[in-house]
Image (cartoon, rainbow, N blue to C red):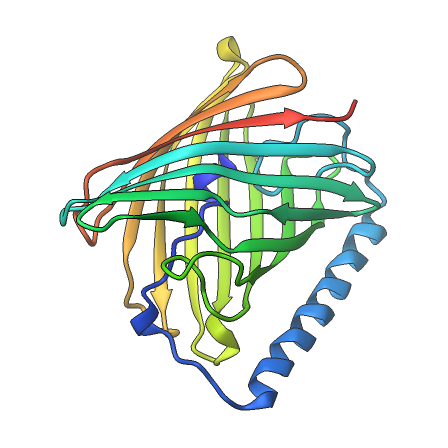
Length: 274
């Protein structure tokens, strides 16, 4: 639940903190790791022989069922203490199930910045896959793995310049009939340079049957260069079910390290196939 910005939002890293490698092996090896990782992830899902339930997929670890097409899209607004304001429009993820694997395509948001810095254009696109690693028979525990490749197609202010690899492990746990906990661990390799970093996220919440949804409050921390140094963010989300094929999410958060004002987001989930 609330996968919009807890789990789906990707920040643009400052270009000055990234190192490019000119060695061929440093670029090839991560591609091989990504391919091996993707192949390995499909094996536990087949062994489980517990098919994903058809219908709208909202929880972060959820994988859309085979033959299902789902669109997640929205808009977010951010502001900084320096006066830089930004609007991300679209934030779309097209998700399609093929057997035990979910294929993902993100065309990149239309970004508009104004104030201290002005520009507009599209972010880099992303292609990815996701599959179930473990799902309990009761459905109360679900762990999935995800791999995403960022492809440099955006404007100069937003592009990574070179492909980037993201590998994630996501877990959802139901605690009784009302409470839940979602967690995520990301591994990120900018420019395939070996200058890795990671992100840890925790999002506990409670189901609210009266609105066919729920609410939660979470925390995330970026871990740079394999050290404990990084920035922390807190965020909250409210999820509303709008029938069997549509859901709405409202969220807000704040970066505790930069002291920037609150950022806000709205996201809609829509099942395109029945």
